[in-house]
Length: 117
Image (cartoon, rainbow, N blue to C red):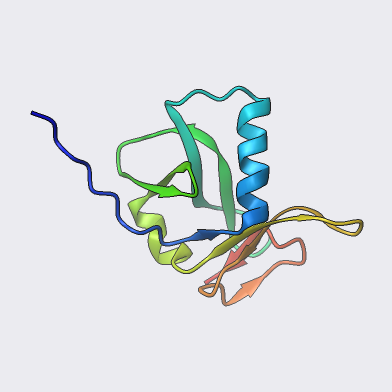
């Protein structure tokens, strides 16, 4: 008898560019199937909180989501800071990297990687 795992809708979205870059990074770094993309927050940064984005193993307290073929892990407590956020990847001449559009941020820093609520 198998038990089905119900996967809730993800509180964040990844743009097509972000998904493409994340799949590319996962393949280049040969990251195993037991790892997923961790999205979260941590204290620090010039505005008070910084975003966490990287491949990691699932931990106690994590919720798991599936976004465009990617396993995504997020600590349950981080959902209130990240609900509705969009992660994008820019590959332009002036800016290259992941960007975060967070509707919960009261202010953000100039670099776009930290925020205040």
